[in-house]
Length: 502
Ligand code: BES
Ligand code: MN
Ligand code: MN
Image (cartoon, rainbow, N blue to C red; front, top):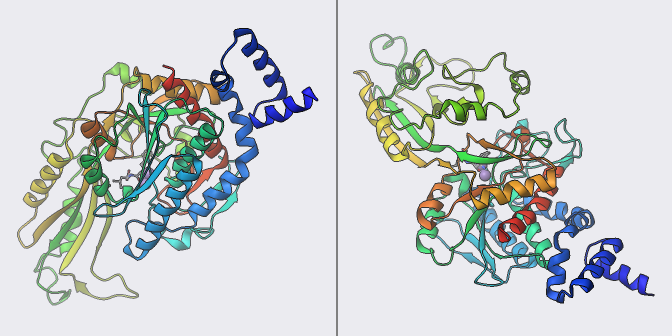
């Protein structure tokens, strides 16, 4: 009878009967009060909890992924709003005490919190529920909004294929399920706030607006974000840096109308010829950017730091093979991993103009356009770089055309030291669940709002990402490994545990 009831109790507490017996004994010897009992036995139940609930976790995520919350395309605005509602419901069910949809000039922000004791530290979780457009659609092997599970070379346990699976619905949802575990098993060791936005993929303008107006509400001791990646499933890493971004659109205008390329060819400037030449001149033979002043504030890493970076496992052969390229390309004097993380870049994201229909049309177009992004590194100011670009680009326009530069969005880069309580708690959490110390890595991607959080709220962000570079975020066939999803859910409560008990 005793055995049977202890078994029932132990199942209720998500621990094995053996653990239950042992812990009851220790509790009795130490005469720990019951409240402590839960806390004392605490986190060992996480693996069991995940094992017992993983099918439900996955099917809930699949439902979330079915809503096409594409923030860039106004045709989907109702879907974006519906996704906010779904996230609100999920947070409520997972155990937030209060959840609200906060209206902004743009898409709403889902805010939720569970304050167990105002004297305890507070973790603010940030994520985004919007996704990138899915196109080009014909390159997807399954519908981007009808999630399917398939195995891949990197994900032998299966991966969920859908737009937003990794960036960022899947990673954001790990936090919701980690909260569910902590609340349901009485393992939440501190206060938690959630702030999930719907405009990350288009520049987070409304979030900036919201953060500026809600300092008190968003007060926290650390911000926790899963919207980045790690090296490999057997090589955990924590992102310690993000690049900044300056995004511009340029327009080159020649004659006032499209012209016959025979009658006028050779006698007037062709805007496409001119634009491509101007773009080509933005890099020199060492693939360095030629905009005067562009590198003035770039942080140069010491040889020691570069040596440290070079220790991260990396195979150039595999890198090339994964992308089907016969060689890499980039700034002279830097390794591939340096080029895509600690060095700034300038890339054309799209270029158009003239005739691109079937067959041939002999024409000199009136206009040519390009969208250009510059990835920036710490200390480069994105507004200053945008101005430098504008000034330079206008100055190199030859006679015969006019040039317009239209700045889009941008944001500052970010670096976080690794000797903070937050980083240490994250490192311990990974070591616990992966059985390996995580490697600190600077990422090439951007989450501009992270620098703004530091400026407005005075808090550092910990970037605990669980995606892989091969997960094809922003590309056709985006996916997120089941292993990664569940490992994230397992690791997050450990972060809370170590951070609250620092
Ligand atoms: N989650 C990504 C950023 C990211 C991915 C950082 C992987 C590090 C590793 C985010 O959703 C994103 O796509 N950011 C944009 C910038 C934004 C202003 C549109 C980016 O990096 O292009
Ligand atoms: Mn993202
Ligand atoms: Mn993204």
